[in-house]
Image (tube, rainbow, N blue to C red; front, side, top):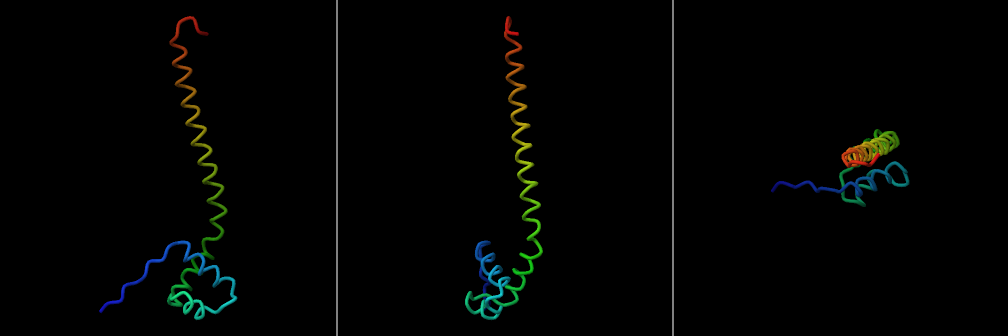
Length: 92
């Protein structure tokens, strides 16, 4: 019978990876505690360490992109209102 791999959510992976990074327990200890193969924990740990810097880069970029999208939306709304009011005779 074939063994089916468990699917772990992102919060679980992050928790295990951060514990591995802290170094309070060895990888084999964490593997036994969480029921995950040690190679998987090494993989998650490596992934967290590689992408840690991007958390700060993407956070700022996302905020800027969201702000720009809101501003463009507001500009479009104001243009529509201006065009509508320009059609009303005697309003200037």
